[in-house]
Amino acid sequence: MPPPADRGQASVELALALPVVITLVLGVVQVLTVAADQVAVELAAREAARAASVAADPGAAAAAAAPGFDVSVATGGGTVTATVRRTNRTAVPLVGALLGDLELHAAVTMALEPP
Image 1 (cartoon, rainbow, N blue to C red):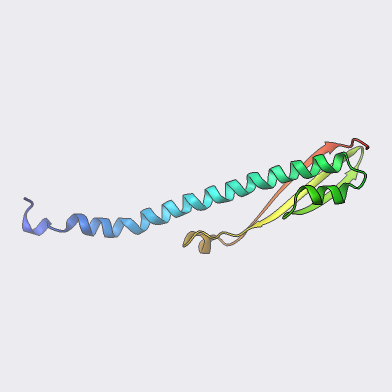
Image 2: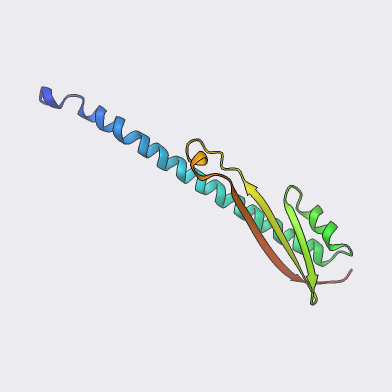
């Protein structure tokens, strides 16, 4: 049995360390959420560029291929570039309030393939 002076030491150490551990875990969750959203933006840019490269109206085709995203299309030189933007709402408790919202974007260029 530990001496009377050491009783409760583990409880105090846990109480001091637990907030730091919880904040770190929530930070990892937030980073993973942002990474997943960035992958979604990149995939949406690829889909928008592919749809725009084979359509008669590239802008409308790109917007239809990536609903829920802000899509802009530029054509020229036999290529089409689709740029997709999305604001990531950082909503993980504690950590989200510290980071604020992030602007995610991706651009993909493909050769025009007339319909």
